[in-house]
Image 1: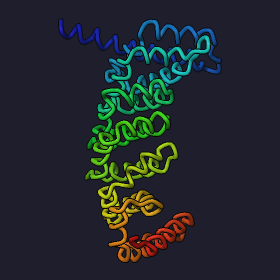
Image 2: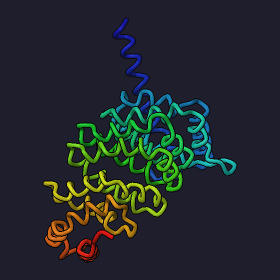
Image 3: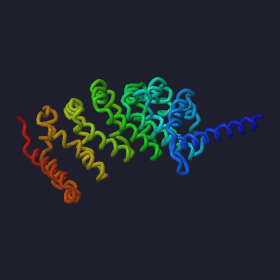
Image 4: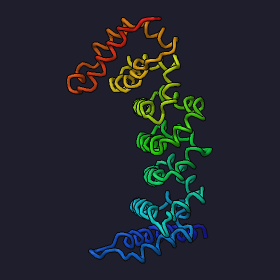
Length: 310
């Protein structure tokens, strides 16, 4: 009886794969035959009406590799469909948060992390969905996903985290202002990570966030904290040249700030001779090839050498 049930389940999963292949043909055509607009519209509506997207997501780890690829193609195509000026699939997902939960669950599963990441990043292009993810109870789970020991899973999860934090700038800026302490408590763990890729990616993203105009208030607060300055000064001397380089782009914001708080200024003045000497010889090989970096480095040296306590 159990063997018969397994065969039945296997057959059902195979049928999902065949159905997805057929959906793909309906959306994109086959053998030189273009797709029929009326079939595309009816397919989109039918997938939503039957809750098929959620049903397939629930068994995605069981379907074949090619079927998973087809599901990504179908899902992301249907996601863009409009009816009466409304994005019907986006509205459906907003009303059915279970789909978002299943996609987030998939980020931590090596079998489906890649397709779930591709779909979730496509969903995050729409602010209504981005808001659910960012303000929802599961947002900080992403900080665990990006530290997964499996490189491909961690890298893909980081792409999704970056999409959450950079796509809808005003939404993110408001979130960071309202949740500054909790957010940076989690983010600081990424900057201290033993995983080289995680640390490097986190430093680079931090630099982008701080230099984004929408995040001016967050940047001002971050560069007013002496502990953050100490961390960047330590990372400037990391063993990895890439870590040094990414930390430089965060460190420069502390130095360039015309209104340095006294604790920040004290640290910089106390270490100014060492810092100037260090930066003069910092990544000279890169400076020869990167004119902008060379200019920024020279500017920083000049700024540091001119520092003094009032």
